[in-house]
Amino acid sequence: MKGMWLVRHGALPPNPERRIVGNRDIPLSPAGRRQIRALACDFMPILAGRLAAVVSSDLGRCRETTSILLTGNEWTASPPPVHFEPGLRELDMGQWQGLTKAEIEARFPGQFDARGRDFAHFQPEGGESFTQLQNRALEAVRRWRRRYPDGTLLLVAHAGVIRSLLAHYMALPLDDALHIPQEYACRTFVPEW
Image 1 (cartoon, helix red, strand yellow):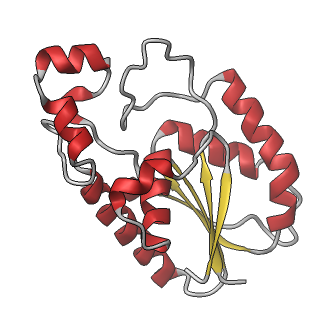
Image 2 (cartoon, rainbow, N blue to C red):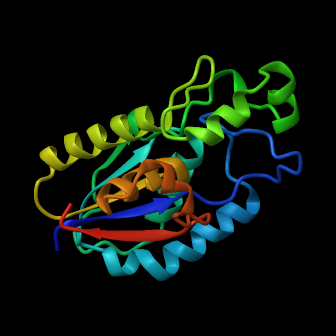
């Protein structure tokens, strides 16, 4: 079947202050590793021999997710080729990364509210807009689909990337992308991409 599985990486370490993660290279938490091991046991045997390739964000949490998913599975021939793709990195939040909402409001007055009014196009200082994220993620998918025109791809990425791809696929306005559920270690199939 031609299509694409989208898998979000496992949980990150607790973030009680709700600091902006963005594309900082934060590893999986122990709970995140357990989530992905459980997903690997339930999900990966179904895909054995059916994947044309695995394409993962090059950030550590996705690399580790990919490694866990592919470890210990019985592949009918050989495991699928794995590619690490910078175009699937999470949204670059620029100077906001690592800050809390209160710190953003103090350092960049009015910008947090401005982002809320124009989620798709707002670009924090030194970062990118959600539209820019969607464009680079779509280009990455197109590039890998050209390389593997038949068969199923498994993409391992981040909530923002997956939401932007699903919004495009479902022809939703990008401003509605945050309403698309994306729990840690979730999976979604998109046929005929």
